Length: 365
Image (cartoon, rainbow, N blue to C red; front, side, top):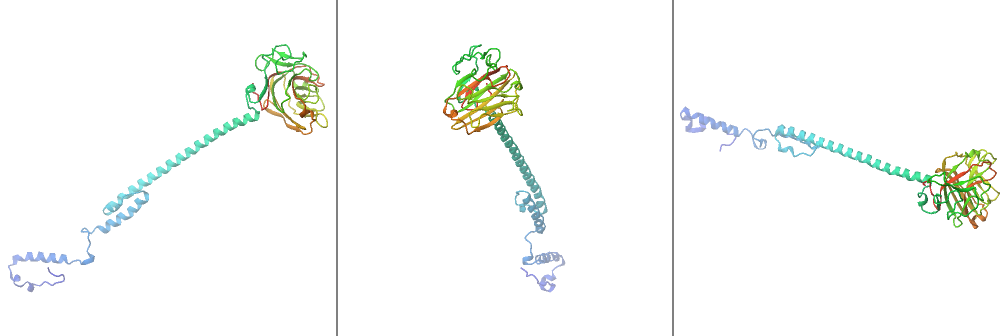
């Protein structure tokens, strides 16, 4: 093989130079091939026979990077030239769209879940409302079926026209208190307490074994409370069946004690310093039923009480720590009906759906 860089002259061909002229074209082709073989040397030669590799690599590499940033893509080196690089951004955009859609979907789901969770919690709270409303009225059971009930009378089983003859009431020969078959809160009968001085003719129940009593009675007045006069009682507690000592729940009007706040009141005797009265200023109308609830408790040297009308507090819990020993050491009686302590009214008071319990009763029949 000829070495590159050799000089070729006519004299070196020797006798061939003297061949006929028609052989020259073949020699001229051979010399051209030798010149082409020696036009580049060693490391400067490219392995790509088309000389396009630099352009292809430059085009594909930036496009591959953009595609990878937008989303996961195959290696674009498999492409050739600029055309392969241009196909990658399309995959990159698709990757970004997929990512955007996924992000939006997750956010909507999370938001909806949060709203639903909030709504569910709100509903549990409102049920809290409901239990809160019951607590406000002191309701535990439903009338006679409530827990702790030890006396319940709707007077339906009693004989009309006479004093209540049920087993819970102490017999009495008075005629001013009797079962009425013409007026009732539920059913057809109630207890009518007529005009009577002091509590001797009220319906009385012996509850001596009780120290904490919740009493409920539905009451109706025969005249408005502003016509009560000095004092009219309709529910009382006391260690005797007389009028002192006792706790009276009733009405006061036109007297010096509750002149500034006439209406429902509580008067207590048998405490140090004499009689004490708490005035509510809450007046009652005639000929409508009210749910009266009284809580009374007693202990050595103390008594406490509170009053609610239709579930609303009218006399808050009040405690006297200087009660006479009779309040804790003696018996205890409930007195129900109507009593008069200097009052000038002659109208009656009706009672119905009476319940005594060791727990709050509420206003349910």
